[in-house]
Length: 402
Ligand code: ATP
Ligand code: MG
Image 1 (cartoon, rainbow, N blue to C red):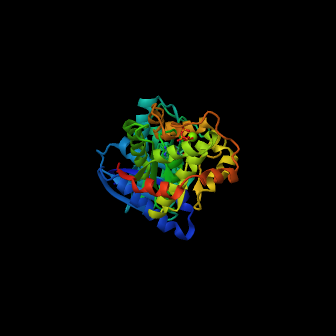
Image 2: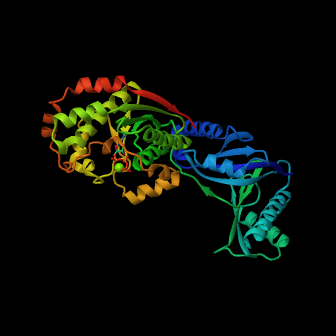
Image 3: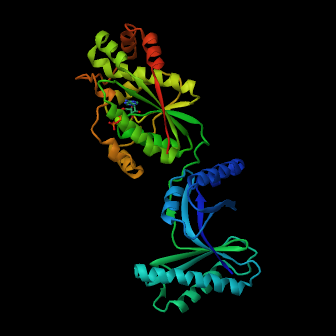
Protein backbone atom coordinates (compact mmCIF):
# COMPACT_ATOMS: atom_id res chain seq x y z
CA UNK A 1 0.00 0.00 0.00
CA UNK A 2 -0.53 2.05 -0.86
CA UNK A 3 -3.01 4.75 0.11
CA UNK A 4 -0.89 6.71 2.58
CA UNK A 5 -3.79 7.66 4.84
CA UNK A 6 -3.08 11.38 4.66
CA UNK A 7 -5.00 14.11 2.93
CA UNK A 8 -2.74 15.52 0.27
CA UNK A 9 -3.07 18.77 -1.65
CA UNK A 10 -1.27 19.29 -4.92
CA UNK A 11 -0.49 22.97 -5.21
CA UNK A 12 0.48 24.30 -8.63
CA UNK A 13 2.58 27.41 -8.82
CA UNK A 14 1.67 29.59 -11.78
CA UNK A 15 4.25 32.16 -12.80
CA UNK A 16 6.59 31.12 -10.03
CA UNK A 17 7.31 28.01 -12.10
CA UNK A 18 8.57 30.18 -14.99
CA UNK A 19 11.21 32.08 -13.09
CA UNK A 20 14.32 30.52 -14.68
CA UNK A 21 17.37 30.85 -12.46
CA UNK A 22 15.29 32.37 -9.68
CA UNK A 23 12.77 29.53 -9.64
CA UNK A 24 14.16 27.99 -6.50
CA UNK A 25 13.99 31.34 -4.64
CA UNK A 26 10.37 31.88 -5.70
CA UNK A 27 9.40 28.34 -4.76
CA UNK A 28 11.03 28.62 -1.35
CA UNK A 29 9.20 31.88 -0.74
CA UNK A 30 5.95 30.23 -1.77
CA UNK A 31 6.49 27.22 0.53
CA UNK A 32 7.15 29.66 3.39
CA UNK A 33 3.95 31.59 2.66
CA UNK A 34 1.88 28.39 2.45
CA UNK A 35 3.32 27.14 5.74
CA UNK A 36 2.48 30.35 7.52
CA UNK A 37 -1.02 30.47 5.99
CA UNK A 38 -1.60 26.95 7.38
CA UNK A 39 0.00 27.48 10.78
CA UNK A 40 -3.28 26.71 12.60
CA UNK A 41 -4.10 23.58 10.59
CA UNK A 42 -2.97 19.98 11.21
CA UNK A 43 -0.28 19.95 8.53
CA UNK A 44 2.51 17.38 8.55
CA UNK A 45 4.61 18.75 5.69
CA UNK A 46 4.83 21.26 2.86
CA UNK A 47 7.41 20.19 0.27
CA UNK A 48 8.56 21.11 -3.20
CA UNK A 49 8.41 18.13 -5.54
CA UNK A 50 9.41 18.62 -9.17
CA UNK A 51 7.42 21.70 -10.08
CA UNK A 52 4.64 21.13 -7.54
CA UNK A 53 4.16 21.90 -3.90
CA UNK A 54 2.79 19.06 -1.88
CA UNK A 55 0.88 19.71 1.33
CA UNK A 56 0.31 16.69 3.55
CA UNK A 57 -2.32 16.96 6.25
CA UNK A 58 -3.96 14.59 8.69
CA UNK A 59 -7.25 13.16 7.45
CA UNK A 60 -9.30 15.07 10.02
CA UNK A 61 -8.16 18.51 8.84
CA UNK A 62 -10.87 20.92 7.76
CA UNK A 63 -10.34 20.67 4.02
CA UNK A 64 -12.47 23.71 3.18
CA UNK A 65 -10.37 25.82 5.51
CA UNK A 66 -7.09 24.54 4.02
CA UNK A 67 -8.33 25.23 0.50
CA UNK A 68 -9.47 28.72 1.43
CA UNK A 69 -6.18 29.60 3.11
CA UNK A 70 -3.94 28.18 0.40
CA UNK A 71 -6.19 29.72 -2.26
CA UNK A 72 -5.37 33.17 -0.88
CA UNK A 73 -1.60 32.73 -1.08
CA UNK A 74 -0.31 34.72 -4.02
CA UNK A 75 1.77 32.59 -6.37
CA UNK A 76 -0.61 29.63 -6.07
CA UNK A 77 -2.32 28.91 -9.37
CA UNK A 78 -4.56 26.00 -8.45
CA UNK A 79 -5.04 23.33 -5.81
CA UNK A 80 -6.26 19.77 -5.96
CA UNK A 81 -7.16 17.71 -2.91
CA UNK A 82 -5.75 14.29 -3.82
CA UNK A 83 -5.36 10.75 -2.57
CA UNK A 84 -1.76 9.63 -2.44
CA UNK A 85 -0.70 6.11 -3.39
CA UNK A 86 2.80 5.01 -2.43
CA UNK A 87 3.82 2.30 -4.91
CA UNK A 88 7.44 1.79 -3.86
CA UNK A 89 8.26 -1.93 -4.17
CA UNK A 90 5.01 -2.73 -6.00
CA UNK A 91 4.66 -4.08 -9.53
CA UNK A 92 3.10 -1.90 -12.24
CA UNK A 93 -0.02 -4.11 -12.27
CA UNK A 94 -0.43 -3.84 -8.50
CA UNK A 95 0.09 -0.10 -8.70
CA UNK A 96 -2.53 0.37 -11.39
CA UNK A 97 -4.99 -1.81 -9.46
CA UNK A 98 -4.43 0.29 -6.36
CA UNK A 99 -4.92 3.51 -8.32
CA UNK A 100 -8.01 1.91 -9.88
CA UNK A 101 -9.55 1.19 -6.50
CA UNK A 102 -8.87 4.75 -5.28
CA UNK A 103 -10.44 6.14 -8.49
CA UNK A 104 -13.43 3.80 -8.07
CA UNK A 105 -14.06 5.04 -4.53
CA UNK A 106 -13.90 8.62 -5.81
CA UNK A 107 -16.35 7.81 -8.59
CA UNK A 108 -18.76 6.13 -6.18
CA UNK A 109 -18.87 9.37 -4.24
CA UNK A 110 -19.52 11.35 -7.43
CA UNK A 111 -22.32 8.99 -8.50
CA UNK A 112 -23.97 9.25 -5.11
CA UNK A 113 -23.58 13.01 -4.64
CA UNK A 114 -23.80 14.34 -8.17
CA UNK A 115 -25.55 11.59 -10.10
CA UNK A 116 -22.60 11.31 -12.49
CA UNK A 117 -23.16 8.86 -15.37
CA UNK A 118 -20.15 9.35 -17.64
CA UNK A 119 -16.47 9.72 -16.88
CA UNK A 120 -12.99 9.89 -18.24
CA UNK A 121 -9.58 9.14 -16.74
CA UNK A 122 -6.73 11.48 -17.64
CA UNK A 123 -3.33 10.02 -16.77
CA UNK A 124 0.06 11.68 -16.72
CA UNK A 125 3.27 9.79 -16.14
CA UNK A 126 5.68 12.40 -14.76
CA UNK A 127 8.18 9.66 -13.86
CA UNK A 128 9.21 8.00 -17.11
CA UNK A 129 10.71 5.09 -15.16
CA UNK A 130 7.23 3.84 -14.46
CA UNK A 131 6.93 1.07 -17.07
CA UNK A 132 3.39 1.81 -18.35
CA UNK A 133 2.72 4.74 -20.67
CA UNK A 134 0.08 7.37 -19.84
CA UNK A 135 -2.67 6.31 -22.31
CA UNK A 136 -2.42 2.72 -21.09
CA UNK A 137 -2.54 3.79 -17.43
CA UNK A 138 -5.73 5.75 -18.24
CA UNK A 139 -7.31 2.76 -20.03
CA UNK A 140 -6.49 0.30 -17.27
CA UNK A 141 -7.60 2.56 -14.44
CA UNK A 142 -10.77 3.26 -16.46
CA UNK A 143 -11.39 -0.49 -16.73
CA UNK A 144 -11.09 -0.85 -12.93
CA UNK A 145 -13.63 1.98 -12.46
CA UNK A 146 -16.08 0.46 -14.96
CA UNK A 147 -15.85 -2.87 -13.15
CA UNK A 148 -16.53 -1.26 -9.77
CA UNK A 149 -19.27 1.15 -10.91
CA UNK A 150 -21.63 -0.62 -13.28
CA UNK A 151 -23.79 2.44 -13.94
CA UNK A 152 -20.95 4.37 -15.55
CA UNK A 153 -19.98 4.80 -19.18
CA UNK A 154 -16.77 6.25 -20.59
CA UNK A 155 -17.15 9.52 -22.51
CA UNK A 156 -13.80 10.86 -23.68
CA UNK A 157 -15.30 14.00 -25.27
CA UNK A 158 -17.72 15.43 -22.73
CA UNK A 159 -17.42 13.44 -19.52
CA UNK A 160 -19.52 14.49 -16.54
CA UNK A 161 -16.60 13.60 -14.29
CA UNK A 162 -12.91 13.71 -14.97
CA UNK A 163 -10.42 11.95 -12.75
CA UNK A 164 -6.74 12.75 -13.03
CA UNK A 165 -3.98 10.26 -12.28
CA UNK A 166 -0.53 11.71 -11.83
CA UNK A 167 2.25 9.13 -11.52
CA UNK A 168 5.44 10.45 -9.96
CA UNK A 169 8.48 8.75 -8.47
CA UNK A 170 7.30 6.25 -5.83
CA UNK A 171 3.97 8.07 -5.49
CA UNK A 172 0.87 8.47 -7.58
CA UNK A 173 -1.88 11.03 -7.02
CA UNK A 174 -5.54 10.65 -7.84
CA UNK A 175 -7.83 13.67 -7.85
CA UNK A 176 -10.95 15.03 -9.45
CA UNK A 177 -10.98 18.72 -8.57
CA UNK A 178 -8.81 21.60 -9.66
CA UNK A 179 -9.65 24.69 -7.65
CA UNK A 180 -8.36 27.88 -9.21
CA UNK A 181 -6.50 30.33 -6.98
CA UNK A 182 -5.35 33.91 -7.61
CA UNK A 183 -1.99 33.17 -9.26
CA UNK A 184 0.40 36.11 -9.08
CA UNK A 185 3.72 36.03 -7.25
CA UNK A 186 4.59 35.26 -3.61
CA UNK A 187 4.28 38.21 -1.28
CA UNK A 188 7.63 39.81 -0.56
CA UNK A 189 9.23 38.94 -3.90
CA UNK A 190 8.63 42.45 -5.26
CA UNK A 191 9.59 45.10 -2.77
CA UNK A 192 7.29 47.26 -0.70
CA UNK A 193 4.73 49.91 -1.64
CA UNK A 194 2.79 52.49 0.34
CA UNK A 195 -0.90 52.56 -0.52
CA UNK A 196 -3.02 55.67 -0.04
CA UNK A 197 -5.91 53.85 1.60
CA UNK A 198 -9.28 55.56 1.79
CA UNK A 199 -12.56 54.07 2.93
CA UNK A 200 -13.77 53.80 -0.67
CA UNK A 201 -14.10 50.89 -3.06
CA UNK A 202 -11.05 51.53 -5.19
CA UNK A 203 -7.98 51.72 -3.00
CA UNK A 204 -8.53 48.32 -1.28
CA UNK A 205 -8.76 46.75 -4.75
CA UNK A 206 -5.57 48.54 -5.83
CA UNK A 207 -3.89 47.19 -2.68
CA UNK A 208 -4.97 43.64 -3.46
CA UNK A 209 -3.73 43.87 -7.06
CA UNK A 210 -0.26 45.12 -6.12
CA UNK A 211 0.12 42.55 -3.34
CA UNK A 212 -0.95 39.96 -5.91
CA UNK A 213 2.22 40.78 -7.85
CA UNK A 214 4.35 40.09 -4.78
CA UNK A 215 4.54 43.56 -3.26
CA UNK A 216 4.54 44.01 0.52
CA UNK A 217 2.14 46.71 1.61
CA UNK A 218 2.08 49.60 4.06
CA UNK A 219 -0.70 52.18 4.16
CA UNK A 220 -1.33 55.84 4.80
CA UNK A 221 -4.79 57.17 5.54
CA UNK A 222 -5.82 60.84 5.59
CA UNK A 223 -8.68 62.11 7.72
CA UNK A 224 -10.09 65.48 8.69
CA UNK A 225 -10.98 64.79 12.30
CA UNK A 226 -13.33 66.10 13.79
CA UNK A 227 -15.05 66.72 10.43
CA UNK A 228 -14.53 63.03 9.71
CA UNK A 229 -15.54 60.74 12.55
CA UNK A 230 -13.81 58.05 14.61
CA UNK A 231 -16.21 55.60 13.00
CA UNK A 232 -15.01 56.58 9.52
CA UNK A 233 -11.48 55.70 10.64
CA UNK A 234 -12.71 52.40 12.11
CA UNK A 235 -14.10 51.58 8.68
CA UNK A 236 -10.68 52.06 7.08
CA UNK A 237 -9.14 49.81 9.73
CA UNK A 238 -11.84 47.22 8.99
CA UNK A 239 -10.86 47.35 5.31
CA UNK A 240 -7.18 47.00 6.15
CA UNK A 241 -8.06 44.04 8.35
CA UNK A 242 -9.82 42.28 5.46
CA UNK A 243 -6.78 42.97 3.28
CA UNK A 244 -4.39 41.37 5.79
CA UNK A 245 -5.79 37.98 4.78
CA UNK A 246 -3.97 38.55 1.47
CA UNK A 247 -1.14 40.94 2.37
CA UNK A 248 -0.25 39.96 5.93
CA UNK A 249 0.12 42.66 8.57
CA UNK A 250 -0.30 46.25 7.45
CA UNK A 251 1.39 49.20 9.12
CA UNK A 252 -0.97 52.15 8.71
CA UNK A 253 -0.01 55.76 9.26
CA UNK A 254 -2.90 58.16 9.73
CA UNK A 255 -2.58 61.86 9.06
CA UNK A 256 -4.91 64.70 9.94
CA UNK A 257 -5.26 66.85 6.84
CA UNK A 258 -7.61 69.40 8.34
CA UNK A 259 -5.08 72.22 8.95
CA UNK A 260 -3.87 71.84 5.34
CA UNK A 261 -7.41 71.85 3.98
CA UNK A 262 -8.28 74.94 6.00
CA UNK A 263 -5.19 76.75 4.74
CA UNK A 264 -6.11 75.89 1.15
CA UNK A 265 -9.73 76.98 1.57
CA UNK A 266 -8.65 80.29 3.05
CA UNK A 267 -5.92 81.13 0.53
CA UNK A 268 -6.58 79.44 -2.81
CA UNK A 269 -9.30 79.43 -5.51
CA UNK A 270 -12.21 77.22 -4.50
CA UNK A 271 -12.22 75.12 -7.70
CA UNK A 272 -8.59 74.08 -7.05
CA UNK A 273 -9.22 72.74 -3.54
CA UNK A 274 -9.34 69.05 -4.46
CA UNK A 275 -6.31 69.01 -6.72
CA UNK A 276 -4.28 70.99 -4.18
CA UNK A 277 -5.30 68.62 -1.39
CA UNK A 278 -4.32 65.66 -3.56
CA UNK A 279 -0.86 67.11 -4.17
CA UNK A 280 -0.39 67.49 -0.42
CA UNK A 281 -1.52 63.91 0.12
CA UNK A 282 0.99 62.63 -2.43
CA UNK A 283 3.77 64.75 -1.02
CA UNK A 284 3.15 63.54 2.54
CA UNK A 285 2.80 59.95 1.33
CA UNK A 286 6.13 60.20 -0.47
CA UNK A 287 7.89 61.33 2.70
CA UNK A 288 6.36 58.48 4.71
CA UNK A 289 7.31 56.04 1.94
CA UNK A 290 10.93 57.19 1.99
CA UNK A 291 11.09 56.96 5.78
CA UNK A 292 9.59 53.44 5.77
CA UNK A 293 11.60 52.21 2.78
CA UNK A 294 8.63 51.86 0.45
CA UNK A 295 9.76 52.12 -3.15
CA UNK A 296 6.54 53.43 -4.63
CA UNK A 297 3.11 54.82 -3.92
CA UNK A 298 -0.11 53.01 -4.81
CA UNK A 299 -3.48 54.67 -5.42
CA UNK A 300 -6.92 53.53 -6.51
CA UNK A 301 -7.20 56.16 -9.23
CA UNK A 302 -8.92 55.32 -12.49
CA UNK A 303 -8.65 57.50 -15.58
CA UNK A 304 -11.49 59.99 -15.80
CA UNK A 305 -13.40 58.65 -12.78
CA UNK A 306 -13.68 62.08 -11.16
CA UNK A 307 -12.29 65.59 -11.77
CA UNK A 308 -9.05 64.82 -9.94
CA UNK A 309 -8.46 61.78 -12.14
CA UNK A 310 -8.55 63.31 -15.63
CA UNK A 311 -5.30 63.03 -17.56
CA UNK A 312 -4.51 66.71 -16.85
CA UNK A 313 -5.19 66.29 -13.14
CA UNK A 314 -3.05 63.16 -12.93
CA UNK A 315 -0.13 65.01 -14.53
CA UNK A 316 -0.44 67.76 -11.93
CA UNK A 317 -0.76 65.23 -9.08
CA UNK A 318 2.25 63.24 -10.26
CA UNK A 319 4.31 66.40 -10.38
CA UNK A 320 4.08 66.61 -6.58
CA UNK A 321 6.27 63.53 -6.10
CA UNK A 322 9.42 62.00 -7.48
CA UNK A 323 8.89 58.33 -6.64
CA UNK A 324 6.83 56.10 -8.97
CA UNK A 325 3.06 56.04 -8.45
CA UNK A 326 1.36 52.75 -9.23
CA UNK A 327 -2.27 53.03 -10.33
CA UNK A 328 -3.32 49.44 -11.02
CA UNK A 329 -6.95 50.46 -11.67
CA UNK A 330 -6.10 53.18 -14.17
CA UNK A 331 -7.77 51.45 -17.15
CA UNK A 332 -10.59 49.72 -15.29
CA UNK A 333 -14.26 50.60 -15.28
CA UNK A 334 -16.03 50.94 -11.95
CA UNK A 335 -18.01 47.74 -12.64
CA UNK A 336 -14.79 45.76 -13.04
CA UNK A 337 -13.40 47.27 -9.85
CA UNK A 338 -16.59 46.40 -7.98
CA UNK A 339 -16.41 42.80 -9.21
CA UNK A 340 -12.95 42.45 -7.68
CA UNK A 341 -14.02 44.23 -4.48
CA UNK A 342 -16.84 41.70 -4.09
CA UNK A 343 -14.52 38.80 -4.82
CA UNK A 344 -11.94 39.83 -2.21
CA UNK A 345 -14.58 40.71 0.38
CA UNK A 346 -14.05 44.47 0.76
CA UNK A 347 -17.12 45.74 -1.09
CA UNK A 348 -19.69 45.54 1.72
CA UNK A 349 -17.41 47.45 4.07
CA UNK A 350 -16.45 50.03 1.43
CA UNK A 351 -20.06 51.00 0.74
CA UNK A 352 -20.86 51.80 4.37
CA UNK A 353 -21.75 55.48 4.27
CA UNK A 354 -19.07 57.36 6.17
CA UNK A 355 -17.54 60.68 5.25
CA UNK A 356 -14.04 60.88 3.74
CA UNK A 357 -11.58 63.74 4.03
CA UNK A 358 -11.94 64.35 0.29
CA UNK A 359 -15.65 65.06 0.68
CA UNK A 360 -15.00 67.72 3.34
CA UNK A 361 -14.59 71.09 1.56
CA UNK A 362 -15.56 69.59 -1.79
CA UNK A 363 -15.71 72.42 -4.36
CA UNK A 364 -18.92 72.83 -6.40
CA UNK A 365 -17.07 72.92 -9.72
CA UNK A 366 -13.63 71.35 -9.37
CA UNK A 367 -11.12 72.02 -12.16
CA UNK A 368 -10.89 69.15 -14.63
CA UNK A 369 -8.05 70.65 -16.69
CA UNK A 370 -5.71 72.13 -14.10
CA UNK A 371 -2.61 73.97 -15.35
CA UNK A 372 0.50 73.14 -13.39
CA UNK A 373 1.78 76.73 -13.45
CA UNK A 374 -1.47 78.01 -11.97
CA UNK A 375 -1.56 75.31 -9.30
CA UNK A 376 2.05 76.05 -8.32
CA UNK A 377 1.16 79.72 -8.08
CA UNK A 378 -1.71 78.90 -5.71
CA UNK A 379 0.57 76.67 -3.65
CA UNK A 380 3.10 79.50 -3.35
CA UNK A 381 0.54 81.32 -1.18
CA UNK A 382 0.86 78.57 1.43
CA UNK A 383 3.64 77.70 3.79
CA UNK A 384 3.67 74.17 2.41
CA UNK A 385 6.75 72.94 4.22
CA UNK A 386 5.51 73.95 7.66
CA UNK A 387 2.06 72.51 6.99
CA UNK A 388 3.49 69.20 5.78
CA UNK A 389 5.96 68.88 8.64
CA UNK A 390 3.25 69.56 11.20
CA UNK A 391 0.96 66.97 9.62
CA UNK A 392 3.70 64.34 9.71
CA UNK A 393 4.67 65.24 13.24
CA UNK A 394 1.11 64.50 14.38
CA UNK A 395 0.91 61.20 12.48
CA UNK A 396 -0.39 58.15 14.30
CA UNK A 397 0.69 54.62 13.49
CA UNK A 398 -1.52 51.56 13.84
CA UNK A 399 -0.45 48.02 13.02
CA UNK A 400 -3.28 45.95 11.60
CA UNK A 401 -2.83 42.22 12.06
CA UNK A 402 -4.68 39.24 10.65
P1 ATP B 1 -14.27 55.60 -4.39
O1 ATP B 1 -13.83 56.24 -5.66
O2 ATP B 1 -14.61 54.17 -4.50
O3 ATP B 1 -15.24 56.39 -3.59
P2 ATP B 1 -11.62 56.10 -3.65
O4 ATP B 1 -10.92 55.75 -2.41
O5 ATP B 1 -11.01 55.66 -4.91
O6 ATP B 1 -13.02 55.56 -3.43
P3 ATP B 1 -11.26 58.75 -4.74
O7 ATP B 1 -11.78 60.05 -4.35
O8 ATP B 1 -11.54 58.22 -6.11
O9 ATP B 1 -11.78 57.69 -3.69
O10 ATP B 1 -9.71 58.80 -4.46
C1 ATP B 1 -8.72 58.39 -5.36
C2 ATP B 1 -7.56 57.74 -4.62
O11 ATP B 1 -6.94 58.64 -3.73
C3 ATP B 1 -8.01 56.60 -3.75
O12 ATP B 1 -8.16 55.42 -4.45
C4 ATP B 1 -6.91 56.53 -2.73
O13 ATP B 1 -5.78 55.86 -3.22
C5 ATP B 1 -6.56 58.02 -2.53
N1 ATP B 1 -7.35 58.57 -1.42
C6 ATP B 1 -8.53 59.24 -1.46
N2 ATP B 1 -8.95 59.58 -0.23
C7 ATP B 1 -8.01 59.12 0.63
C8 ATP B 1 -7.85 59.15 2.05
N3 ATP B 1 -8.76 59.72 2.83
N4 ATP B 1 -6.76 58.58 2.58
C9 ATP B 1 -5.83 57.98 1.81
N5 ATP B 1 -5.93 57.93 0.48
C10 ATP B 1 -6.99 58.49 -0.13
MG1 MG C 1 -12.02 56.30 -6.74
